[in-house]
Image (cartoon, rainbow, N blue to C red; front, side, top):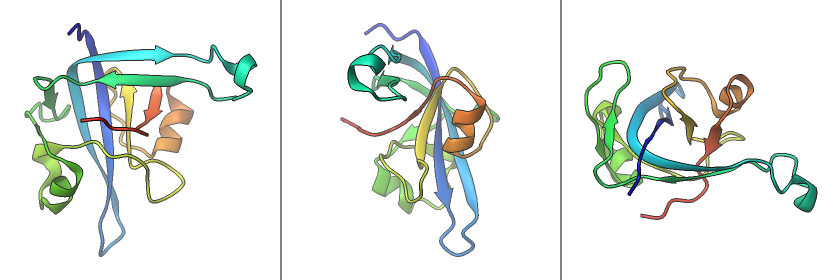
Length: 133
């Protein structure tokens, strides 16, 4: 598979006791990002018609962009059970609030902020709506 792209994956984690929000940030190096930008706005009437399909091969290089330490993929429920999320990454759909808990941006961008703020500040930011393993 042709995998020339890098994306930065953000996974929002809320502490059950303090309600403090933190972000698990992971760079995925060696993915294929297929973008479809707004071409169907006139046909569908959707004002935000951008979409992306992200193909992540099993041998993707996943790492923390600050420490450069490699990370291991875990399914969402197993990821949630971990006490230290720094060594792992996961993909989840949906979110608990009006924003997304798991989203990605094209390229390497280290700016741990909410999905809504990320979309205001950067181009090519996508909510994860479907995961097919």
